[in-house]
Image 1 (tube, each protein chain N blue to C red):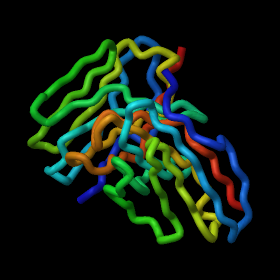
Image 2 (cartoon, each protein chain N blue to C red; image 1 turned 90 degrees about the vertical axis):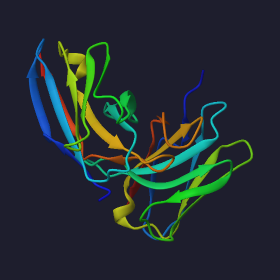
Image 3 (cartoon, helix red, strand yellow; image 1 turned 180 degrees about the horizontal axis):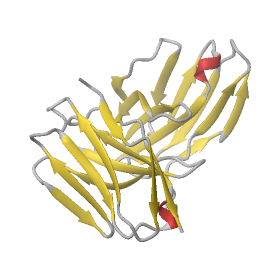
Length: 112
Length: 111
């Protein structure tokens, strides 16, 4: 069975640009969460979606937005990129919210 | 109150030894405590998890010890192997809410 799939794996953007990251959850998983992991730190929660509804939002500016589609895949959008947005962006899926999350390998975003 | 504090930041253990990583939390509403293992270039992988109604959980060489009164939990890796060299994260969550991660421990097992 395929795990959590994220695309692209690596991305280089210029300050001020916009980026869209994509995530396909494990088949049958209805909950998707996004995390930002800065080098040398633990992942920080950005968003949680369940059945296409936002269930939680972390302490991130409005430049960050996300959505979940009817097939439970998800996109994370970041506008007006800053150098500090450079990080590994992780998507995690779960059959139910809150427990047993499986993470993808992430998208490495570099802002120059 | 949402923080999870993890120690040590780095740990070096000889092959065959016991690796011990500790975490402390403040929010008594947390009811799920997982440990994740992360290799370079990969996402975190769930190792083992515990709920506060249990004081210890063992899966193979990995054991979680949980002290509810002290608001602490720890990961013990028995017979540590070079392949266990990775970064380990503790985490906690409340019900269906987000995972709050510790800062991570870089574990190195010397052969």
